[in-house]
Length: 449
Image 1 (cartoon, rainbow, N blue to C red):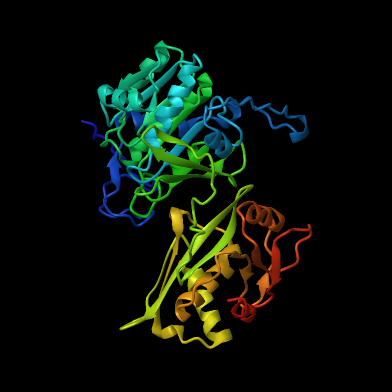
Image 2 (image 1 turned 90 degrees about the horizontal axis):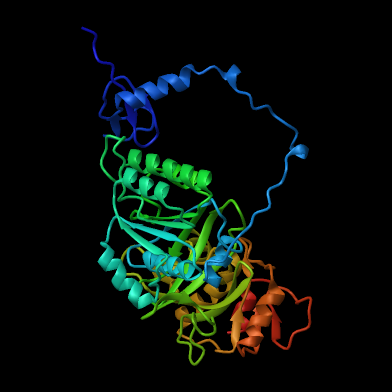
C-alpha cells in the first residue's frame, strides 16, 4: 500500500517541508507549519511541472504599451476621496486598518450608504455583527437605502456565490480576519486563511471590475494582523490614527497604486457617525493660553498646513532618566536632547523628558524640531511662551536650523489663524504680514523666549 505523501507549509514565510517541525527553518518562527491538503499539493505539482514554452505572452517595448485612463468615482466623502487620490478606482482592492473603535466600520457603512443613495448596488459583508446590528448603526448614519444589501456570513464560498448571483458596484468586507475558506484547512484569521481569501477577493475585484474595501484588524504594534503579503497584494493600504477618546480621526495612506500617499483625511466623530472635518482651525491647539512646556508649530500633511501644539514635560529623575514621546519619533527626541546638552549646557541627563503631540496626530516630518526644543526649554525653565509665536524649522546634529519645504504655505496658514510672529530658519520668498524672526542655530531660540 502506497504511503500517503504529506507536505507542510509555514504560515509566516511559505517555507515547505516534507515533515512537521516545531520551528520553521526558513524564518525561525515556532509552531507555524500546517499540513496542506491533497488538492493543494496537486496544484503545487502542476504549477511546478508546467512548461514555460507554452506561454504565448511575449515581451514588448514599454513605448508600445497602451496607457489606461483611470476613471474614478466619488465616495461621497471629500476627505476619503483626497486620501485615495481623487476617488474610488473600479476594480481596486483597498485595505483599511486601525485600532478597535476608531471608526473603520462606521466610515465604510457611511460610504456604502452614500453610494446606495446614488442608485449603485452595494454589498456589505459582516462576519462580526448581525444584520440587525448593522441596521441600527445605519439608522444613526442615515445610510438606509434599498440599494444597500447586508450579508452576515463568514464562509468565503457563500460570499462569492452572492457576488456571482447579483451585480454589485461596491463591496465591503468587515473583516478579513473573520472570513474562512473551506478549501484551506486552518482556523479563521490564520495566516493561510487571510492569504487565500485576499487572493480570491483580488481575483473578483479585477475580473468583475468591482472596487472592494477590506477592514483589517491590527496587532499590538499597530500593524495589520496577518502576513505582510496581505499588504503587498492589495492596491491601497489606509490606516486610521487618533485617540479613540477624541472626536478627531486621521486617515493616512501608506500605499496607493493609483495615486500619492502624501495626503491625509481628517474626520470628526459625532452622533451622526464619522463625517468630514469642516475646518481645522483650533482643532489641534489652544490659542487662548499656553502653559509652560507648550509650543506651536505648523506641519504639512500633504498639501494641507495644520497648526499643532507640542507639549513637553521636564522633571527631575529619581532613578534612570526616562525619554518618552507620543506622536513624535523617540529616537529623534533623544538626538535633540543630546544636542541641547552639548550646545546649551543643559543637564538634561538627570531629567525625565516627555513629549506629546496634541490631538492624537503623528508628526512624520522634521519641521517640528524647533517647536520641540522650544517646548522643552519652556518646561525646563517653567516659562510660558507667547501665544502669538509659531516655531518652524529642522534642527541638524550641528545645531544648525535648516530650511523646510512649503514655508510660504505655512506662513499663509499662520496669518489666516491670526498669529503675528514666526521663528523660521530663512527669509520667506514671498512677502508676508507675519513678523518673521530668523534663527539659524539653536542658541538663537533662547533669545526669542
